[in-house]
Structure formats: structure tokens, C-alpha cells
Image 1 (cartoon, one colour):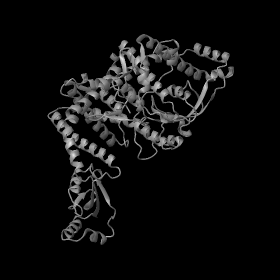
Image 2 (cartoon, helix red, strand yellow):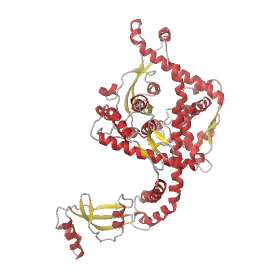
Image 3 (cartoon, helix red, strand yellow):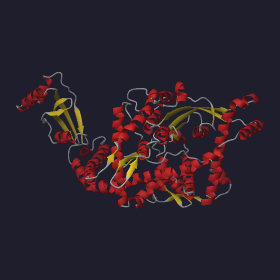
Image 4 (cartoon, helix red, strand yellow):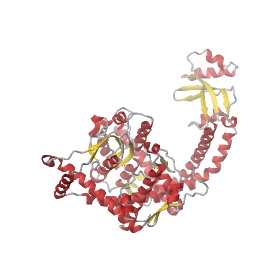
Length: 594
């Protein structure tokens, strides 16, 4: 727990003109799932890893700004979309959350002063005439217990009603009655009910077991209901007389192009409840290839601007909606709903910019973390060209390895790959509960190459499979890592074997040439990143307040934490980071003072 002397704004590290506050560090540490690593008494080491991973991001963000990568179309677009989310969220805080506080407090006080639980039994009939006859008998004085005893087919279980029910009208009727009273006949989709109030309970007033949780839940219900009232009023006022038009023909065209992509994923369905998700590659192909003839056409006309089909496809990429089936009507229904959300969020963002909310401290702080993350990703992309390898380099690499008898480390993992982060969160919780990762891979992994092996890769070099190989090389057998962001989605894997690779002989050279090329390319990229990061650290300067880092208490939620935004939308609470710390040893070796 943070002490009174500690402040969220205290600077843990400074990188050029960018700082890492205690608040950012703690959030990045605590909201990054690290599976079993916290159990191994290496929290100080983990704190350093996370901090140096953040510093790596900030260094590359500074370099990206210097190279003006923030002006490149794709990066500029991503940055603006993230900023809009935080602008909308701040608009919600001002127009809804802040204004609803007084109402929420009044509701909360009302809940605390009355029963918060009601135990009841029910009479049921599918026939209105019959239920009204029951009601008449009860009004004439027939005891409820006598009536229900004479009706053996009736359910005898006691029902529990709590404040916060989805059906507020039913809640008001139930909670307004005293012990022993009966409701009037009430109609629902499955038939007619009369409820008999057995007992009203006040667990908070009585301080009965679990009252603290009940207290917090009531507070949450009061807040949600108050905000709902102000939200509806604000949305009605804002959208009154707003004119927008979405092009139906483009919606149909988009659906026709998405359906084949969803059909290709049908083989991964393990049951009817499994949902379909598009992968990042699907969205890339939609924008760059499949929809290339229409991607720049106007999809939505607003009063003062137009949005293209490209804008909507990128919105879908960020939202990654679930499709329950590949039926055309269902796909159109999902896309229609997302179009409505897209229109609403654009109008809300515009309203936030009118109020200059992008300039507020709250938006600047929250957006700043994601801005640096996006910029560092853009800067890393610059290094991909440096990883190209010629035939001559491959031959030299082979000769060097053989002359020095360098055996590379091989690893074997069991992996679960899935494009949906919520599914990965489910996987993490099931692993935590003790379920076998191979069984989970059968159920959730979409990697084609390991479909027949329950997620097992077989031995491969740590220089293969990009970040998966690099991270696996740092693990011990039995360790589990994830989620790791990869081009196909998110990866969670367990290291099950680790050994030295046998060197290829001359006859095997041609057969392993392409593998050696991949290995060398990965090593070149890694070395380039290390050397460039050290150069940046020296150029911009890196200072770390070791005392603040040591004294900052941390815990681990060890789950994927989401942030829900006002006016809709959600994403991970912090950027999903795989700390890159390979540069630190070289930087320290050059006696750069932290």
C-alpha cells in the first residue's frame, strides 16, 4: 500500500524529455500478467525488468518524434484514434459522471436505509385466467402456504432478490412490500407470477457476514443507475436533430467480403458457442487488398465531415467484434450495430474537441502512456529492413558457427494462440486454476501448425519465431509466459524442454540454409535494437531514482485488466508489453551512470 509520503506524480525515471511517474510504473507492473513469476521471490528483479522495458519504449518514442514518425499516415491515424478515446472519456466524466454524483449519493443513502435483500417464493401459471384466480383467492384471505401446498407442480424454492436487479420495475415492486405480502400478478416472457415476500433483510445494518461486499456493491449500483439517468439525458440532447447518413450499399459490400474470412475460421470452432473473430491480418488484407477499389469511398456523411470505409474498417479492427455465426443477416446486424457506435463516438469526440478536452491534464496523462507505446512500435518498424540477410552472410554465419563450435539453444513449448484478448484472459484464469495447458490448446489455440500436437511446437531455435523464441530462451522448464502480442493475435506458452542444438554437417548446410537465414536475421535485428537503444540512452540520458523504485510497493493482479471508457469502448488498462531488456547489460557496461 502506498504511504502518505509517496505521491503518484513522483518520478521513477527520466528519459530525455519524457518521465515515468510512480503511477505509470505501478499500473504497468500490476496490470501486466506475469503468471507464476511473482511466486519466486524475484519482485525486485521483476520491477527492474518492467522499468527498463518502459524506458526502452520511451527511448524509441523520443527517437520516433525526432524522425517525425508521428506524421506518417498510419501512425498519425492511430495516435488520433487513441486521443479521441480519452477525449470522449473526459467528456463523459464532465457531462455524466460528475453531474451524477449527488444523485448517486442520494440513491446510496436510500438503499442503506432500507432492506437490500428480499427472500420470496413464487406462484406460476402460463394462463392469465388461472393466475388471476390465484390472486383472487389470496385477496380473500387464503394463506399463500395453503395455496402452494395444494399445487404440487409449483416450485417450492426460495428466491433471493437484491438491490441492483436488471429489471428495476420488478425490484421496486418487490422491495416496496412488507413481510408476508403478495405482489399482484406479473407477466414475463415465460408466463405469469405472483411473489410472496417471506422476509426482508438488511445485511449492512445487521453487519451480517459479507456486509462489506454488499456495501460496495450498493455503492456501485447507485453510481451506475445515477449515471445511466444523466447519460440518457445528455445523449438525447446532443443527438437531437443531428443528421448523419451511412451508405447501405457499402455496408452490404463489406459484409460480403467479411463472410469468406469468417468461413475460413470455421475449422477452429470446437462448439456452437464459439464465436468468430477476424485477425489483424484479415483487417490488413481488407484495407490493402480486398476492399482496395472502395476503401476510400465515403461511408458515413456527418454534418461537417465525411468518414471513409477505411475509417470504419480501422474502427472494426480496434473493436474486433464477435460474430456468433457466418449467416449474412447476422453479419449485417453486427456491422449495422458497429456503424451506429462508430457514428456516436465520432460525434462525441467532436464535442469533446470543441471543449478542448485534449488539453486537460487527465487526457494528457492517460493518452501520453499510449502515445509513447505507439510511437515506439513505429520506431521498431524502422529496424525490419536491417534484418535482411544475403546468401553470403548466411554462408559466413554457418562457417563461423562451425569454426567456433557454437551450439544454439533449442526450446520446446506448448502454446495457445488466439486473436481475442478476452479468450486469452479466460485461458490464463483456467491455467491459474490448474487446468492442463495441452487440453486448453486443443480448445482455444488457432495455430494451424500445432493443431495435431495439442499446441506443442517441437524443438526449435530461440532465434526462430521472433519474440516467442527470444522469450522462451530466457525461461526455465515449467515456466508459463503470456500474453505476448504477436502478428496473429496473443500467445500464451509453457516451456517444456530446453537443450543444445547439434551442429549441421556440410551435407546438411543446404537443407538448413533458410533456417540459418531466419536465425541470422533475428540476431541481426536483436543486435541492431540493442546497439541503437544504448546509443539512444546515451544521447537522451536515462536517470533512475533507485530509492523510489525500491520503496514503491507493488502487488500483482495477474489477470488481463480492462479499462472501460465513458460512452462505450474498452481496451487493456495499460499497453501489453514484453519488456525488452537485452540492451541494459551493454549500456551499464559502458559505464553510463543511471
